[in-house]
Length: 246
Image (cartoon, rainbow, N blue to C red; front, side):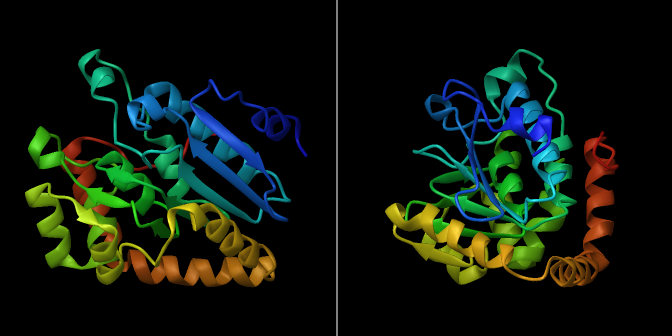
């Protein structure tokens, strides 16, 4: 294990992220850990998440990652107190998820709202508990999406559902999310992490080079039109979608 990855494995419960190293062979689990704020994304959390992802992606033993939140939520989006204070919210962690060298599974344990939904959409796929629910409140709050919503949401659920979700700001429950393709599976809340780790463990046991090539092929197919949507979103929100900073 690299020194950076070793340091990344030892955050305290008081920090904005918790790490479970190797809950299964080749698997790392990261949990957003601001439960009093429903795991809202502060600038500090985003910076630490990017550093942890970089550390684990650089570790050769990492074959799959599970991303979840500390109950009761997955992620409530960007911390509005931080926005009011004028904080900068670096998008590097979202970019790093989008370009991850290994599969990332979102284990959605509760509400995934706006930036939290974009975080989940940046993962390879999502499973949820019966408590999972999703919303995009950009239009309600007067913010233009900047982290990939315009491309990733319609890719996941189709144009009609994406427009309904984003233009109404209404919540979609776990059952509906499963039906429209936002979730791959819905499991009992107390089984969510076990199932996510089980799936990640199955991925970790495949041939890494073949799995990488398959993911690359799916990414090319997905982004044939999605890349244009990302560029249009970037122009509208004045955010440049370049590679993550190293």
